Amino acid sequence: MTISTATASPSGAALNKRRTIAYYAMFIALGLAVAALGPTLPGLAANTHSTLSAISILFTMQALGSLIGSLSSGRWYDRAPAHIFLAGVIIVLALMLALMPLMTTITVLALIVFVIGMAGGSIDVGGNTLLIWLFKDGVGPYMNALHFFFGVGALLSPLFIARVIALGGGITGAYWLLASLLIPAVLLLLRLPSPRIPYQTDGDAATHPRWLLVFLIAAMFFFFVGAELSYGGWIYTYALSLGLATITTAGYLTSLFWGALTLGRLVNIPVAARVRPRYMLMADIGGLALSLLLLLFWPASTSIIWIATFGMGFAMASAFATLMGLGEHHIAVTGKITSLFFVGSSLGSMTIPWLIGQFFEPYGAQSMILWIMATVLAAAVTLAIFLWMIRTESPTKIEHHNIG
Image (cartoon, rainbow, N blue to C red; front, side, top):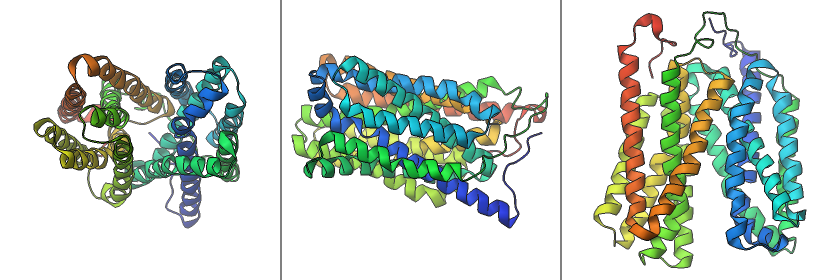
C-alpha cells in the first residue's frame, strides 16, 4: 500500500501549492545553470588558453556528471528529507558556477563542470519524483509546467549573459549573476517541510516493481531525449551544410526549435489534465514523424525547414513530462526508479548525437534526419510493446489501477 503525500484539506492543498512553487523556482534555476555553458564557451576557452575543439570536452563532462548524479541521488529521496538535500545541492551548484570563470586550467574547469552536471542530475530527479509524490495520478499538468519553467530558465540564461557582457561585466559577472539567482530557490525549499516519503510494505509494488516496465520507459526516455538533443544540436550545421540558412539565420532556426519546445510545454499544461499519457505520446510521435517526413521529401526547401523545425520542437515538448506521468500510472515511482528513467535520458543525450556526428560528413546531412527518424520509430515500437504488456497483465500484477 502506498500512502499519498497529497491531502484534500485546505491546509494540505496550500502547503502543496507552496512546495510546487518552490520546485518551479528550482527548475528555473536549473535551466539558468544548464544553458550557461554554450554562450560562454569562447570566454572559457580564452580563460584556459584552450581551443574550441579542446574546450568542447566540457559538454561531455556535464553529461557524464548528470548521468552519475541521476543514478546516485535517487536512493537519497527514498530515505531522507528531500528539501535539505536539494537546498545543499543548489548551494553547491551556485558555488561551482561562481568558480567557473576563475579557472585557468581546462582540467580543473572540467572537474567543476562535472560537479555541475551531478548537481543538475540530482535536482532533475528530485523535482520530478517529489512532484509525483504530491499529485499522484493528477501530476500531468504540474509536470508539464515543471519542464516549462526549466525552459524559461534556459531561454533567459543566454539573455542575461549577453546583457552582463555588454555592460562590461564579462563572463565572470555573468556567472556570478546566475549563481546569485539560484539562492531564492534555496530559501523557498528550506522554509517548507519535505513531502513525506511514501511508505511501502514488503509486498508493495515499490519494493517489487515490474522491472521490464521500468526498462521500457527508460528506453523511451533514451529515444525521445536522444532525438530532441540531436535535432537541437545538429539543425544549425544541417541548415548550413545544405545552404538553407546563413550563419545568422541558422542561429535563429536553432532558437525556433527551443522556443517551440518551450511554447509547447506551456500549451500542454491544460491538455495534460484532460488527455491520457498514452494518447499524448502517440500524438508526439505522429508530429515528430510528420516533421521529419517533410524534411526527407523536400530537403531543399527553405520554408519547409522552418515549418519542420517548429513542428519538431512543438511535438517534442510534452514527451519528457508525459513519460513521467505514464510511469506514475503503471509503476510505483520511487527516487530509485526516477534515477533509472534519467539514466536512460542521459545515455540518449550522449549516444544519439554522437552517432549522428559519425555519419554526418561521410554520408551527408540527410543522414541526420534518417537517424532521428529511426530513433522516433524506435520510440514508437517501444511504446507499443509497453502498451501491449500492460494490456496483457493480470490484474494482480498491475502496480496501479489507473491506466494511462
